[in-house]
Length: 302
Ligand code: ADP
Ligand code: MG
Image: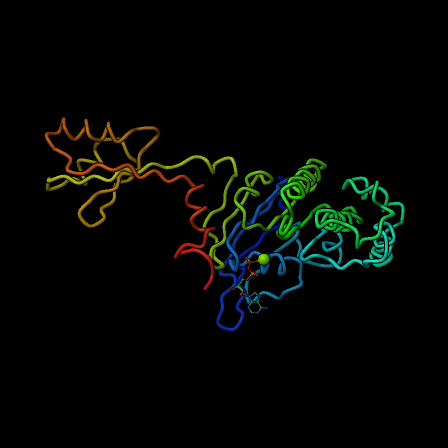
């Protein structure tokens, strides 16, 4: 698949704060790519840089294999913050102003309003809109010049559950229409519901990059303690794990396939070794991310 965005070694320093630290990422055509991380992890900074709104301290990025330029920018629709619309103007009037700025024919206004489900409210003043409707209008505004890439920063922040569901549905529809989408979010749930691929940022560092469908899967490790001179070799020879590492007085086996702790126990017993301690450490990615997103000791910036 064609590479839409390629980020190489991107860093951003704000005084003493390293907001982004050597980020490498690739987004392919058709991906719905989530950038997941707790507050302050560098999501907005990343989006700002790839939209050429913020200057990076070092590193590069390319859109469609080119340095960002006027043409690449035209193919990107973005909603970085709640955009400012005129409260006393209607949806249509507001979007016509955007058409003037972006040099897009007015005919697009009705099309995008239908696309975001605001056609029935198109002649209503902006100030009467619910937050969800306001967000849909910003999406409509970003869609006006028919971009191939859509960038959304925390698109459901502040919305009620129904508004959240509607916006997520809309994002999925836009993705199905063939656009590549990049979404920053601090909600694992949102990323799981909407995205195909995602990465996780923690204090500006990339700590995960993969498929959303892999999230539920967990790797199981088994902790073992036993009196034996060379437990490491014995465990390695078992063929039950991919790696065995020592941690103080115990050994941790990363289990291969669906081998179980019971098999480790049976194997040791056969070797004439009695396990004094056997503990399954099962930690799905989901659990790990939720801990990070909840901003535990390791999570969040400062
Ligand atoms: P996120 O969007 O993931 O919440 P941000 O990219 O907004 O994170 O922020 C990343 C880090 O950079 C945070 O520590 C934040 O305080 C800091 N930061 C962001 N913008 C600025 C700025 N203009 N000046 C100084 N520090 C900033
Ligand atoms: Mg942010």
